[in-house]
Image (cartoon, rainbow, N blue to C red; front, side, top):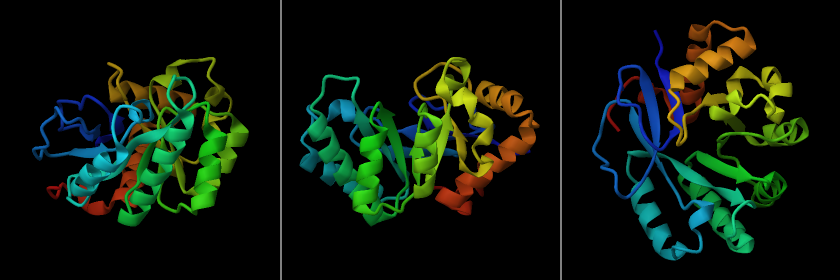
Length: 228
């Protein structure tokens, strides 16, 4: 029986016997190795005015050169916050280049800025896997992003019945889907159950496919439980 993959969380599920967790790194958290627990790290768009990116970059390089960090993120653009948008784009671009350099997938935070992210991806010729967490864009934007090695992660947004995604969720290839809990208290099992109901698909088939997606991006060795 396959495990549940939680591709983006800020509070890892304590029951590592049923979940593969990709925990967004926080300096206050221990980085000790735990089975089925992996990490991503990056400068969030909300924090670009708080931290000097050149200092952060040195820390990122040190962390992502190790084996515990499997992705850079969450990084991205957010027009809903009062934070210098030009600076956001600058920092996001630099982190994408860093991810490309180290061949690390990226967890992307995007709010009302999909067109700008598409423009940067095209301009910088980004080829690494891009995982858009809590994906909420319209169908046309989805089709554009699909051209650029993009994956789409869903969590609490599957419970917002007025969300745009409801009109085409069943049209997204299963090979491009992930599930997450982000910062919510919802269990990842509940997210899978909701998705399986929406897709009219057996939950074990769904779990198998998401593990395969994880293997495709991060390597089969991780789900073989080799220590990171």
